[in-house]
Image (cartoon, rainbow, N blue to C red):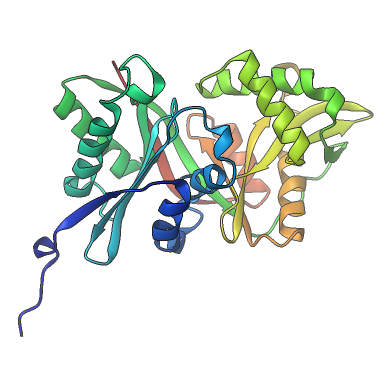
Length: 302
């Protein structure tokens, strides 16, 4: 009996009409590895729920091989395109995405965020392969951004010996937290503006997603819950001012918030760390986070 090989089944790219359309097609296969794919699923879910928060046209695409999802991509300008591939570095599905995103952006002003793809982020092999394809196709170089590790937590090891407690952020702390968010973005190499930091602080306070670690009435660290998927939720925007670091405040804040999320019914929490920062990788493992996979960023020159 003759069986079809994978090479004989054509791959087809489908540009999705919306985040909802993308999730209807891609969510189930992506959530087979839910923690590893929390970024692409969580961003899509956020856009589906709050499309008004996206200032520029977003891009969603899937690549199928027969009835099997083999790749997916999401982009919310000015952020990097998020790529996922079940086939790792194999170029075929990534080339389909590259061709389509170039075609999509050609209709925009090349100097505007929708018209310039600033970079790529994704699991290490796929992201690097996409960056190479970008260089070969456009003739423009790319440079490595951060090397990240995705962690998952299902049981908290409490942080001990750190004074303070976790609480929701308050409306009267917008100025302080906007400043912290701005500095977080600068430290992380993310697009940063005072106005956008304030808008995010206000939105996260209003939604009840932003939390503070407080000692005797003084906020000393922050973290937020974000990007819920079907069974998990991400902890992000973890920030402590430089003058208050190395005292255990961030780990205590993350441990308490992670426990609160598990108590609320989430099966697991995820977070990202910068592999260049051995301290953060160590402290999160001490409170129960375990490595899932690595993710890499690459920036594209105009």
